[in-house]
Length: 434
Image 1 (cartoon, rainbow, N blue to C red):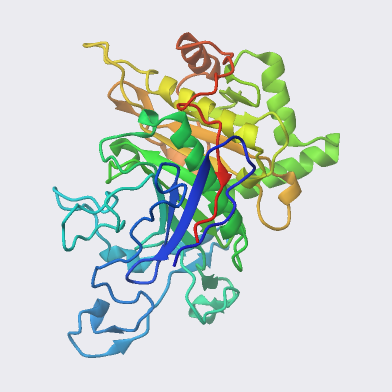
Image 2: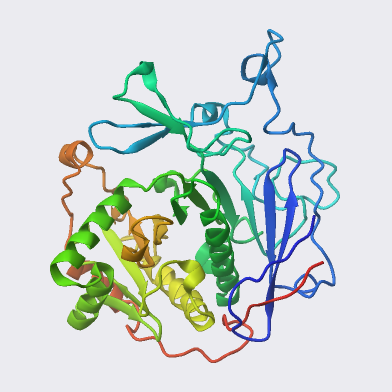
């Protein structure tokens, strides 16, 4: 099935074409194309998936579906239990224990299909793509058909331990079809397409029943635990508000009560007034090292205008973001250098978008990106100490001012507006793909 929906406010003459299909086991896959002949409808990506995968919701036969004892078992989804001591919801995705850990040396499930190959276990049917999004084959959060998202029970029939289905959704975002690339190798135009994909998925996932928060993020580097080097990120649609967001909402509510202001707005304004920790600034965005940063390298990127989430960004803000975000990551990749060769050390990082929650407290949120790294020096990682792991009492290995000063050395703080050309991000109308 091929469908197209508007992908954001117009910002120029070009377009992004969104084409939806289903994989062999029923999972949704979406192509986001910005190149010809696909963007104009002159050609369509491959939509059929030839793999002999069973329907993911079909009953399994035998233990783990092996058929050993002939017993038919209905598919089960992940559950989540509430910690009575903190109130946190803890998803328990035991069905992921049998997922693939590392692919074969000569294959990658995120690469496009090999031309002429009859079958491969890759997730993308076509032999090429610009940006593609699909449901995770082994999700930590999943909504089962026929199971109410608000169904509750008690572990051991004890009211101390309420439980619910972990009825969310997990998606994978492939930033490029080129296996050896990283995000920093992309053009601003391609990053702009990724912004469209993030906004599209945030809008649609937020509308699913029971979803309370959408988190778009990228993990990069073996030090972070990444097992697939292919350039990709993920999107989690949570059926609960995450602990960090809950803490931020409490602080924002207290700040509003005591000052009448918006906490995240006031933090951005204060950082811009001080200027000491501002590392990058453009017409619509400012990147800064937060005054109370806890990670060895940590940078926040926030829009100047009050925006709740990625779908709320205007076309010019999305254009600007594609340039600023790419420049920020490229500078972070030069933060550390090898002491022997003086070559830059690619930074292992987690980059995640904090967006307003879907329900109560939404007005307290404000869009911003957090980029953090566990690398504290060349060849040295930050391991959480006992007080950090056991008590969440963080101790920084440096000061935010030192981190900001290093990033300020790597390029001008103020970015000049980019001249519009084929390598910038000034594009993205939507077109019909029927």
